[in-house]
Image (tube, rainbow, N blue to C red):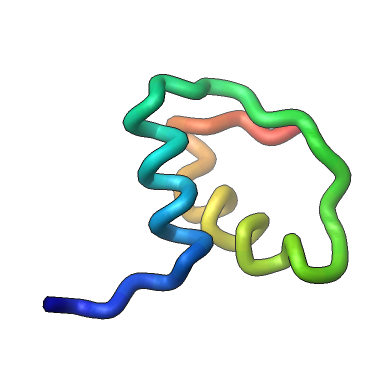
Length: 47
């Protein structure tokens, strides 16, 4: 089984739920999640 980062797994679940927009304030420990969102910017919009 291949390894996947927790932030990438979280974004995959959010995509599976059908979420199209996420609101929040980036920074600190949220950086890895922001990177995962950036990699999927065509499917989830971050505001």
